[in-house]
Image (cartoon, rainbow, N blue to C red; front, side, top):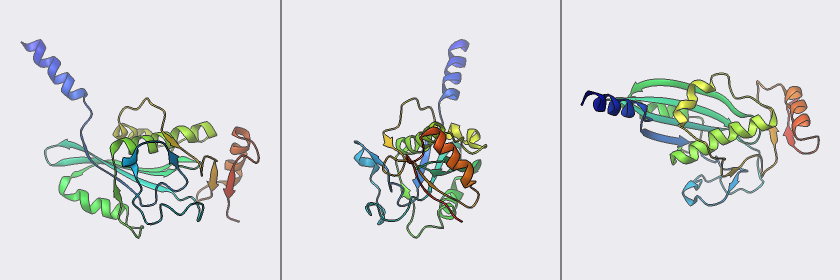
Amino acid sequence: MAPLIRAHAQSVAAREPSIAGCWISPGWSKGLTWEGHPEWRDASEDADDGDRGVPSLICVFVAREVRYTKVSVCGYLVDAQCLGVKNVLGPRVIERYELDALVRRYFQAYDEPPQVVPFDLVQELVLGAEAYARKLGFEPHPEFEACRAHLGTWTASSAIRFGWHGKPFFSQGPNDDARTVMRTLERSVGRGNFDFMAVG
């Protein structure tokens, strides 16, 4: 009986903690396309603006059950058009009653509230953007590996077509080295095969 109990305990321990919630910033789908998955609808008022505006970064937040009254959280700042995972938050264990307030703070820069989304969308968006950026020659944020486990096991290729309507688009942020990024894109996809908006 003891071996069976140990085997069961190991099996339970090996399971991924269940998802307590997934949130994403409004307007996340700008410039992205995919087939199927009607449940991935972007409910933002800015979702259907065609080619207007410029690509924006996407904030993603994932919470997993830990034990009793606690959850473990991770946040991801994603550039789905070029650079992949630019920043991360966590992993951090908090009391479950703190979760709602933390989600509000994480998305406080947006005029609209975050959208509650399925976990498979979060997986395909974050891990797919990471893979897309790697193909372009860009590594994810150095602390991404510490937060990767929150996204579970994922072996499929993403259903999402990354880039700005399928084409790499570099929009320079305050901490981006524009010259290095442009040289990397010229090596990986060739001059004229990407768009950019650089400052200065």
